[in-house]
Amino acid sequence: MSHVRSIPLLSKTLRSRFHRGARCWKLGQCRYQSSTSGAFQTRYDDDQDDVVSSFGQNGAFPNSIPEPNLDALPGPKTSMNLFTAINKTLDTALSTDPSAIVFGQDVAFGGVFRCTIGLREKYGAHRVFNTPLTEVGIAGMAIGYASTESTAIGEIQFADYIFPAFDQITNEMAKFRYRSGNQWNCGGCVLRMPCGAVGHGGHYHSQSPEGFLAGCHGIVVVMPRGPKSAKGLLLSSVRSKDPVIFLEPKSLYRAAIEDVPDAEYEIPLGKAEILHEGTDVTVVGWGAQLRTLAKACHIAQNKYGISTELIDLRTILPWDVQTIEKSVKKTGKLIISHEAPITCGFGAEVVATMQERCFLSLEAPIKRICGYDTPFPLVFEKHYLPDEYKNLEAILDVVEYSK
Amino acid sequence: ATLKVPMIFFCRNNGYAISTKTTDQYASDGIVCRSRGYGMAAIRVDGNDIFAVHSATKAAREYAIEHSEPVLIEAISYRQGHHSTSDDSYQYRSVDEVNNSENIHDPLRRFEKFLMKQHWMDENDISAVSNEERMSVLKAMERSEKRPQPKLETMFQDVYKEMPLNLMIQEEALQKHMKKYPEKY
Image (tube, rainbow over all chains, first blue to last red; front, top):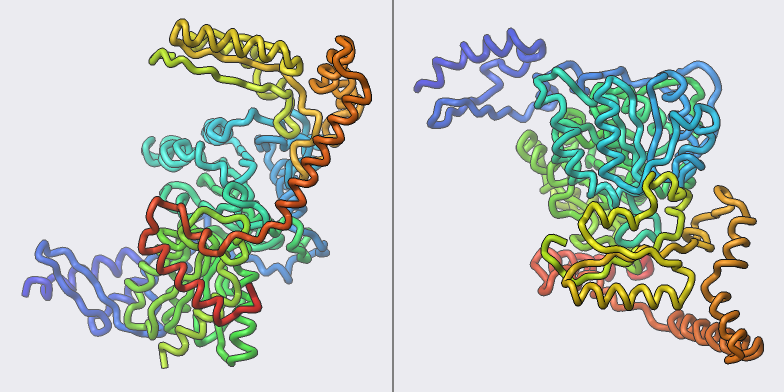
């Protein structure tokens, strides 16, 4: 059999290339299968300790910054809501980067969600200004300005309005570095926008477009879950060497209040965060959905004694496969929940990847609890949303299945 | 324009997009001059003058049909109210500016003055009409508020002409779920 002879050679090559490759490529632990063309397809034994991580130390997307310990930062903390945290971070961005500009519709007077309040007065009209009503223009301008090695922080008024700018995002922003052979890039651009359900948003003020954006390889897609993570993620996004789409759950602008450290800190992109550890079920979400999931997990623990591991993905693209995989190999059960419609939502990508990598670890089919495949409804928003009861049922189902 | 379609494009320019004045939207002489670039005819009209707007639209229609060409109408107006219930426009414009528009340019007031000048209606007549319309709107609101909620199944309808399988499955799952948690929905 031809593939048997090739294994030592491949193994040696890979060990020399990836510093963690040695653990993964021991012959005894891996089974190889060759296709007719001779290319290898590897399958890994279900080994709880051996996380497949042949690519880099902790899997964080390069630009990798260590996870800050928010409680260990020097200085005081201030209680604030999400829009204030965003506002203060934009202030930091403008004060530490003289090239930084903030622009979009209505940002001059403070913005429709007050995220830019006081910035024009502090930094001047040449750095904080309104643009005409044109998303494609805002995106295009952000790309162009960033391509001069400057920092462009554009605001799109609602994520629902991102679609006219999709050509700029897909064909310009995402391809800028690649098509120029790394001669140029537009890494200094961030497009911020409010997303998600808000109780009365209807079709056009409630959408979560992360699923569409996840197909634009070359951009980074980030969604914080509250003021503390927003500050760190936004600062990382502004300083990232890659263009970022920063999605802000609008229902949290006023409603989410946390004690945010005054000190400056950056949260690594491409890295998920485990909110609480557990052993029975892995539960994954992002943005405002984590509040809903936390409620479901709470009921699961207190009423049914089910120990869940709740994970905030934080970055949708590129996403932290390793953290999720490690968790699923531990629990054997996975639930993903998001507001966006289920078919072809980002949950589908997580499911596909996890079943491929953790097949033998799974004790139950992976479940997705998401919005339905309809436009976001107005009157029936409450029925539409993937609430804590639907998620609780999913947790109970997978536990039951695994017995 | 290239297909020579007899069409009227009506642009009501009310001076604002939420907080953004038109001076931040374009550097050109309004919208009407764009017609040049498109090779089409255009009219600018006082959007707060009911007769002027009628006259302009009538002329535009005749032109469009006669030449089989599109016509752009720019009606200059003013957004007196806030952008929405979430907007407080006094954060970015003065009360004087709004009052000025109300007192001088308001289309309804101008029309009322015209009617009175012609002695076709007096102040009492106008009051009566105004109240009648107001009551009619309030009654319509009252009726609407009393209407029962649409049926839940409407949430899954009309996405397509016929409901595809994925929606049938999701609708069934929701119904099953609601039976288990009736008090939550």
